[in-house]
Image (cartoon, rainbow, N blue to C red):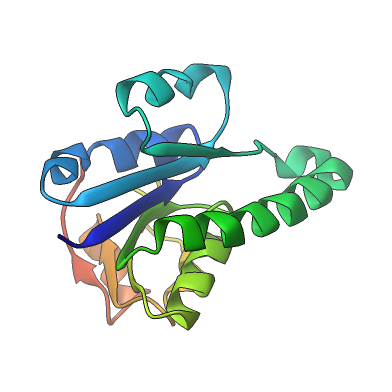
Length: 156
């Protein structure tokens, strides 16, 4: 059974990713997101299948840099712990390093561009588009910006 790593930052990106939870039954899955009070329930609901990265926001740039560097180191450890065949992500900064690491070591990268963007690329979308094996947009208008993408419709 293929190992599938689902990774996203917290908030809306995590909400979008959790719309894919029907896939959890079909694969040997693992979830990675940022640790916040609002998503601690994941540890109990998906016991042994969840890890958290440190929550960081670019609003506090000085501390964010250190948190981001720590998360990169933890990402390396988690990648080899899970050894995923596939990485599925809805973004954002939390997922970028994991996708690049996965690409280097042979994981297939599946990126779902956020529902929130209808006419503009996200930073993470721009970074992952060139390495994604499968890049999905939720709005047809986004195909103009990502011509190699697949229109998947809304996750919700």
